[in-house]
Image 1 (cartoon, helix red, strand yellow):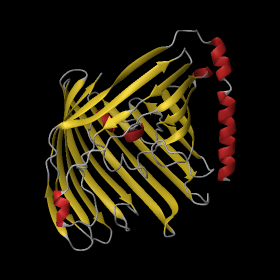
Image 2 (cartoon, rainbow, N blue to C red):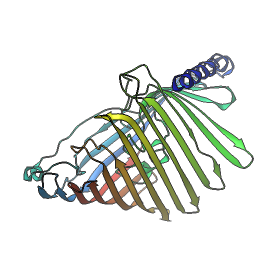
Image 3 (cartoon, helix red, strand yellow):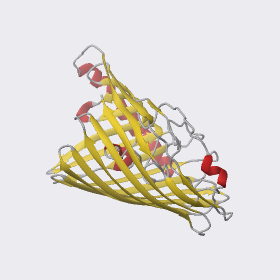
Image 4 (tube, helix red, strand yellow):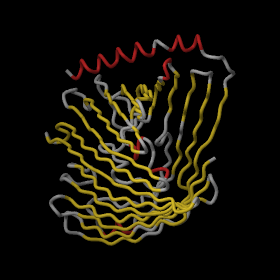
Length: 371
């Protein structure tokens, strides 16, 4: 049944993409143009303080300062060929200090581990062709950025926090990366706006991944909005491994409401990878609730509570792990394009059997500038 659904979806996409010819014949011809923008992020202060207890009974306390340094450069390169065809490439270059504690078996040597800087490209962005279709449809082909959740897919955490949470940045929960085709359109129904996004994906699970089997992935996302209230829902499905027998499914639901300078939003995700390890399913479940308040034109406050669970965490333990976190912070706008960002994370991570835990606080201060 799943294969038949994928086949029908693929045929629909093929028929819709054939409208490119029509779009090309009717578009107004303009010369190609290229625009470049981006973000620069700098760290001013980063000092995690953690108490970690390993499954072997070891315990260690860590307090480290990661000082001042370059954090991240994101570029946004938009090459417009004509009225209906353009290309977007968003490379990312970053230095990672490894400041966030992990849930593994620790020894005293862990407290003296040095900083490890890793540079990478194509971070959370895109590398795709964008085609304007008739009837206000839009198609993107390549490394797309699926809108599985608002927090990650719409990059809403990016607008407020320098660091993403366990819900947003977990591929089994709030984030989704893949290559494929995105088709979107916003419908107007009376006083309601209904954006719809459909995806035909490779079925990979990593950033820019190519699938390891012949089974594609499919996803649909909707965001009906009415009088400042936005609801949302997404569902994703694929077969993730070589034998093409085991399915990976996850779905999300949430809301967002804005009133004057106050905003509140929350999302819930539940997922399952069949027989992921040792014949056991990988179950994932998480949520967050976040409130924001723009006190002054140059000052914004926010607070978030989140929970994330992986039945197999991949961090050196093979039992369910629950991540509980509280995050608060503020953004000070020095200019329209530059802000100082402060974030305080208070985290409590524990395995289901109680043998390993990590409890830590992490105050972080940084600067982000947009150009």
